[in-house]
Amino acid sequence: MADKLIFELSGRGKVGYALPKPDVPPLFPEELLPPEVLREYPPQLPEVSEVEVVRHFVNLSQLNYHVDQGLYPLGSCTMKYNPKVGEELAKLPGFRDLHPYQPERTVQGALKLMYELEEMLCEITGMVRFTLQPAAGAQGELTSLLMIRAYHTKRGNPREKVIIPDSAHGTNPASTHLAGYRAVEVKSDPQGLVNLEELRRLMDKDVAALMLTNPNTLGLFESHIKEIADLVHQVGALLYMDGANMNALLGITRPGDLGFDAVHLNLHKTFSTPHGGGGPGSGPVGVNEKLVDFLPVPLVEKGEKGYKFDYDQPNSIGKMQGFYGNFGVMVKAYIYLRMLGAKGLREVSEGAIVNANYLMKGLKDYYYLPFDRFCLHEFVLSGSRQKAKGVKTLDIAKRLLDYGFHAPTVYFPLIVPEALMIEPTETESKESLDGFVEAMKKIAQEVEEDPELVRSAPHTTPVSRLDERKAAKDLDVRWKG
Ligand SMILES: *Cc1c(COP(=O)(O)O)cnc(C)c1O
Image (cartoon, rainbow, N blue to C red; front, side, top):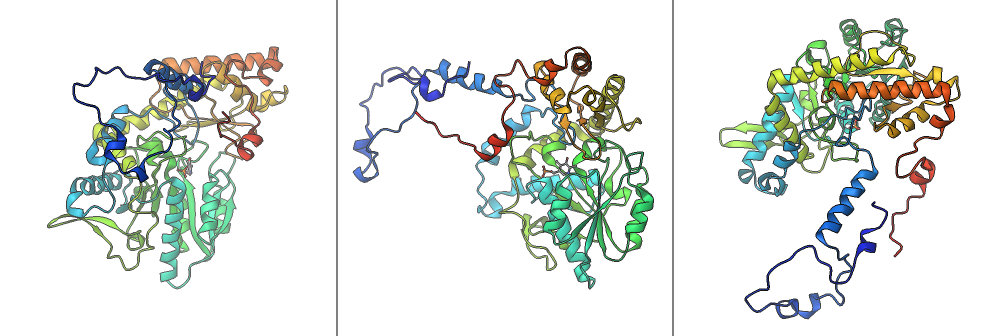
């Protein structure tokens, strides 16, 4: 068990290697280095054997749940399994050891990769150009809104409001506020889609943009997208797509064809970078002709003498990120796209959609399904039936850990009480989906028969319920040896 710190395993003289005695005289640091750079004491490092260090870290990795362990159905997050080959190739010295100040002629391969990645993202989304700079979806949103502000300003008036559906991710109103706009909410209709009547009422010349997630965070495709786009464009506003749910659309439809003027993608959700550990991420933004002049600098251009950074964009909003964004994430996206090809990409989305609908059908007799219609890559259940028996959605989420599954996203989207937002992704087999349905069924039964068992879960994890407030506010990770 990983109940000890590695320092507590340490013993004087234990080593993780066995080497033959050198057949040349040994050299000591004192003989090689001037005294002023020598340490007074040896560094206080743990001394452990190889097997101890391997066991220590393998055991630590078991304390938390991860996608290498089992299904991770966090809705909205697209926690799919990402092929390890991406990690291996992104580690190649030619990628890994680049320095951002290297002259362009020495980084032609990296520039080519960025250029071609941009081309592929344009093709996938139907957009004209992309910036690869933003380091997250949220930063992509901000980048887009700053471009939208620059667009309107150039036309004489930056405008005041950005309209956002009530099912949207919290980053949408936050980015809106940061870009100096006021967020105005539009309600969902009983089908879980944007309420068109209300949208019509809200549209006026003060609206800078509508931010729409499609498919929305209920996993439903906004089927009135054509009418919505017309309403937005009639008042001269722009239509922005939060593309975090792109895992449902690859090779099937394109934001550009649906009438969107800008879209951000989350490479760390859709395009093969693991996330959940806080980064690094990448939230590239694609735009159509209306916004192309405002993209951040630099863009990568292909010239006669090779690839180069182009800073000559007079209307650019400037830089959004130190240097060029998270390059390692771009490498993984590039590899993933080249590996799958157009056909493979479409299969990703089809698999994600089939898996989500399979789970939804398997679960809807046991949990309330507020929007009972064909879903895309995710769907939302409500634990309201179980709540009436005194068991909260949070308790169900914790109990799932006892059955070896990570919990789905809970209490989001906000418009569904006791929400359980489930996204299986395309990388799960039928067997693992069946296992999840079985576990959820068992929990529903436990709620009837032994609600306390669920309320006090988890019972099998290294620690049970944590004091979440304390973990966030009084974090203390110092070693007190
Ligand atoms: C994840 C997500 C975001 C934010 O992306 P980050 O990369 O976490 O900043 C925005 N909108 C939706 C719908 C998301 O799922």
